[in-house]
Image (cartoon, rainbow, N blue to C red; front, side, top):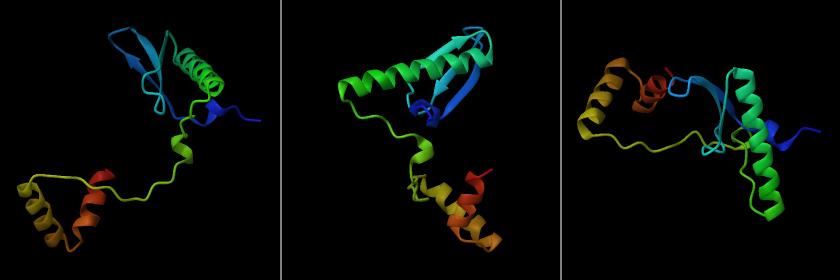
Length: 109
């Protein structure tokens, strides 16, 4: 059986300030783990997430849903200045595509 913390989104990056690798978990942005190796940083952050999950369960707190389990609609609203909106609308018209398709293409780059 898989552990609950196996379903979360982890990332390891280098911290120039600390001179070590740092393990992060997207669902728990306040948690991190420093280690000399990437593998150690990943092991450490997974271990700390596991401990936090155990504490939350023991306290009856709601457990965050992993990003991998969430359903996304594919829609979100972005506010931009009117001049940029106009520029993008012109660019879309010149390319013969909808503004939505142009914005989607630019976001996926």
